[in-house]
Image 1 (cartoon, rainbow, N blue to C red):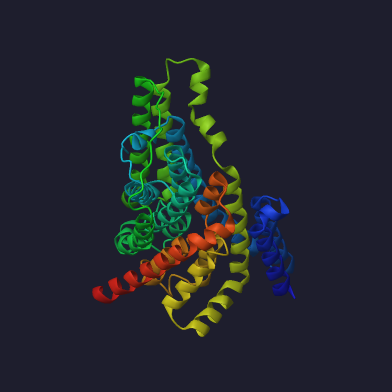
Image 2 (cartoon, rainbow, N blue to C red):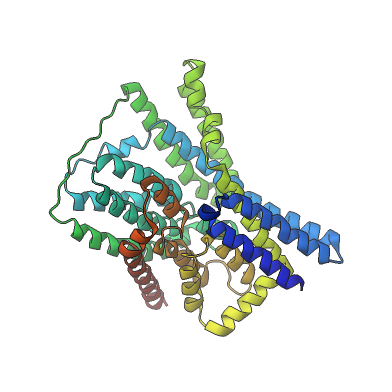
Length: 425
């Protein structure tokens, strides 16, 4: 009875999250409600209230470390954007060939996503391509490729995708190993769709219409913030390796240093200007609803884990599919329909480190499939949802034009990963 009730609450919440636009209710609200309800049901049926309370606080510690990490990263990226730091990249693009531009945008999206995160990269690069291109159809094709590239770029980096970050913070993977193991498969996921779309644009030209109105001083400040921000983000994995402290500690340190730099840069300016470029303003502008969504969904998943439901599901998957690659592929394809954050959180609860130790191929494969599988459907990833909003992409247009390319890339990445493992072993 309790098991059925828990599953019903979780699935109902999930449906509300999936159809947030239809029911006009932000997914953060649905996530928070199911997160609290799942723990309420769990504690009410328990004979040991104190034990459940301790379990909740234990899970909350892990969840908070992810949330504070994301909060710091999003604030640093917002600081770079508010100082027009990303314009340093756009000014270097001087081609008039659509094919070349697509490949340039794809490469930048892929590597920028690994440094920042796929959601931010998708927003920045879609806005950039929208400024450069004038035809609506071209913008849609570019936006579709940016989603694939951003998700592929995020999968191989502990900073690039929230699911890879979760696996890194959870101790399932280490930073250097995941980069080494997934860089080639991630390139395959991205390169094949890019080459196919670039061929479609072969011989086509466009006219650039970018105008930069920034002063010399503003350009210099933008460069300073860009290089400082990216440098500090790269410093976070190094800090974790050297100190063995959780990654969010390095991110908080990075944010503190960024705060000092912005204060020094703007110390002689008017209060209005100072307030516009401050860390406090950046904190106001970040997507705080995403933070609350992650909190709610991770709370719900942790309740299912503590109740023992995820272990049962792991047993069903293992007994039915009987193969790590099949399980990982199934979860990856499922991430196109269901948000990949709870999927990975559920997997962390389903499979212990005693079953699959740190840097086991299962975790690497899971990072690849859940990180890139969401590209198959426009609403299957945070990057896709953001791009859909910016360019007003029709769900069915993406399904007809981009989905098959994303699936080809997804399969190519899996094949490269398996070949890589067979050659190494």
